[in-house]
Image (tube, rainbow, N blue to C red; front, top):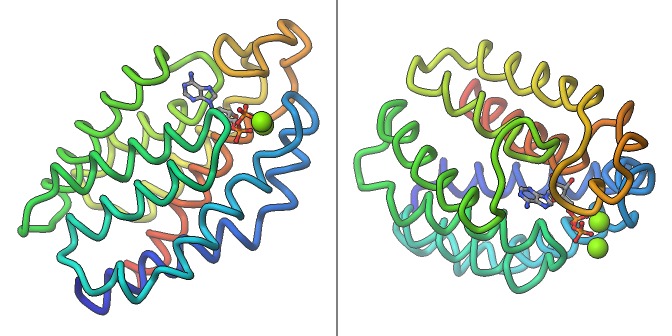
Length: 196
Ligand code: ADP
Ligand code: MG
Ligand code: MG
């Protein structure tokens, strides 16, 4: 893995860890209040493994991030983020550019949908990941960042159809989905690193 990818994984992990309290507050409103704790546990494990992860080629490194997330995050989001990173790593070849990243992300999102039996419009992380994927190939980081922010905000008026928040029915309306927010944080951290 190149120094750039190490910085990328490091920055993403730290960003999520730094926002754990916010993610937990969001999950307190419409879930069981553990999304921040779950994500912090997983990404701290990634940080602890960073040397081993960084020693691998990009695809294998991302697969290991995914495996660590499955093992350490737990909850609904662990297997889903684990699938996202693992499948992204599996699909991404040695050639890394906006087009190959968009294709790998599309493939990874399909696996997340299959695993979660979920689609967009159900107030989940997919409501950020899918619209972001749609603009990745164009390679405009400002646009990617804006789409991530708008899409996370757009989960506020949604009624949850998947995940614990769906147990609240109409009462899930009016709060941002925690997983949508964590996805936005990940996308922003990637954009920050690529903007340098
Ligand atoms: P849990 O709900 O098991 O406590 P977390 O709190 O860590 O797990 O994660 C909750 C987040 O996981 C939700 O905000 C949502 O974005 C995402 N999520 C839950 N179920 C699904 C699903 N079936 N498909 C996609 N995302 C989901
Ligand atoms: Mg939760
Ligand atoms: Mg939970």
